[in-house]
Length: 161
Image (cartoon, rainbow, N blue to C red; front, side, top):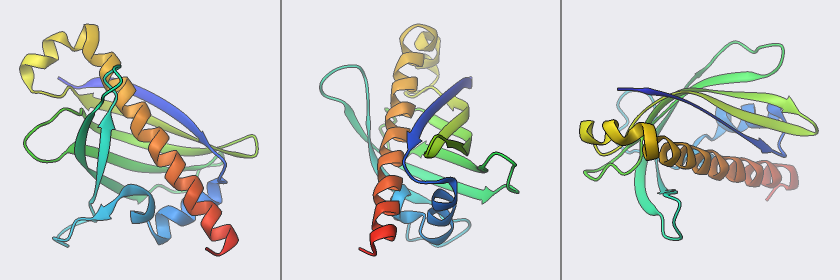
């Protein structure tokens, strides 16, 4: 059963900078490109699931960034999917649209979509109580990490480093 989820995080980079980073070098912010080369690019990154305790659970995640939609008056949008890789699925799978919209002097990244609770159908039963909080923390952590990498990539482009 898929559950609805939304998250947002601000970056210092402008919408134009975010758009150029995703167009020119998405691997700089999404992870290393999976070497199989078949189909659309899939990037693999390690992500720490935030389970609300000091020690998180590390999970390799496959990230796919879809074609960007036609520019909207207020920003840019892309399809984004994240799937846990390997055998231990401690992270939710996510299918979302990521919007980059102007916010102050930077950009707000907004994710809106659905997730599949981790750990299979048995865990879906408990998702309404604890699982949704874990999924939300994990998605927020993923988005915060992505935002940090976008800002570092934008800073490097501005300074030429």
